[in-house]
Length: 297
Image (cartoon, rainbow, N blue to C red; front, side, top):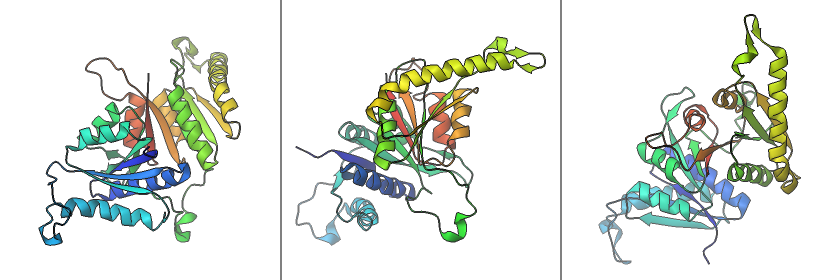
């Protein structure tokens, strides 16, 4: 039986190497194997004894070998599977995701600002994969910052952040988030954003009574939805955050300093609608920490 594995899609970029480092750390935590996958449609069939100077796949092998060298030094005992696939990237990644605990992909930085874009392949994979896809920025590192920079960075307690909607069940999302917090031994911050109803607004501003009622209602619903998961993961400290904002703004406000953001993606969306919703879209483009996109019904 093939061991459970975490797959990382490689394309030779610095971003995919960052994803490989993240995936290796995650595989070590979960006692899983790491699959280093590079898909190249022009991959040639060659005999095992092909001399190096006639190896038509040398460039593809170098992509995987570089990632292997990158993670082996940090994880000398990790089981690593090297996988070269003669296929277009998207179908190869989707197939690998189905056979993995999760798929890690690099996220390409656009500028030095906190914004980035994904290639068409990555965005399609995020929108179609049946397993969680984790997007890792090129600047991400599991190592602490150098001492000379440590005092310049904002201090925040390490934690996992998960954005939760109360409109529908989201068990896969919560299961992934609680498991991520448990394997790291850090708290989980559960964030819910809820816009105020129209009658909360008065000529002088927001009616504080209505705001309090909305907050209490959302907090109660959130606690009720989390109760089974807190019973299943009693070792995970949970912080509830209810903000009277739309979910996108609530997520962007609370995520700075997190080790991982977990967000959901509905499998079944209306025809012609974007593959990911507005919260996931905002996270993909504005969040600097790794982002796990978890499909759910």
